[in-house]
Length: 325
Ligand SMILES: [Zn+2]
Image 1 (cartoon, helix red, strand yellow):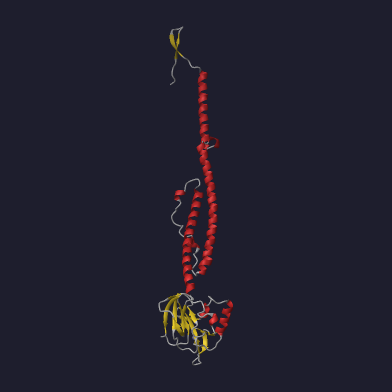
Image 2: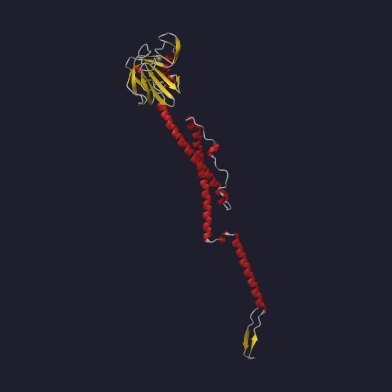
């Protein structure tokens, strides 16, 4: 209810009501309507989020958001590069290292395993940029996992390399008597006629003819398994256990200067050429065992022979002559 106002009429000496003019009321009505409309319009503008209505804080936040999106894009590009580098390393790992060390390659499934099951990106859902953030996080997680797998694989390769190096130094791979000290390579691995019975029989080693007292060298790293003259036919002989299933045997020695259980390196002097045991003339009878079977020692000489020397040795070793046993 609007207030009733009065004024004092000095002529009539009494209070009279102030009558409001009709026009004034209309004016107030129009003005307030306009006011309401204007406020509504302003609210609408704010609701529509028009740029000229943004507060400085909003403007700063918006800039930050744009910058963040750019950063994400940049990170994604960087990640693409990292993925490319990693994939090249994986390739090298599977096709070179693992092939060289004779191990199975790591399959694609193994490399990318462990990403099913629970939704680990639930917390990232429901935002404007959820898709971008989730896809980036996923990519990064996969990349991290792949790097961990690759790193483990390289640890394994390093171990294999170490083993391989041990194997390479252990395998009997040099000639037990120096080339310049050989009178001749008398006989190789294969059927030869026996020097005593003249019967054709298998000769299980290689005979290196050299004067009595010529030094004999260990053909690979290992431990002296035997050095005695108790084996029939071999005379004074030495056996070196190289590990990995390899044993080398040196027979008909004049003497040896090592003891059972002693560690030797490839190239160490172990004894001297002689003619002890079942032997016709001073020579070294040399054998190589792999997993208990005698194999052709010639297959292991890659240590100290040139290609030409090796070819010559091969030719001589293949001649079916008489062995010195
Ligand atoms: Zn022989």
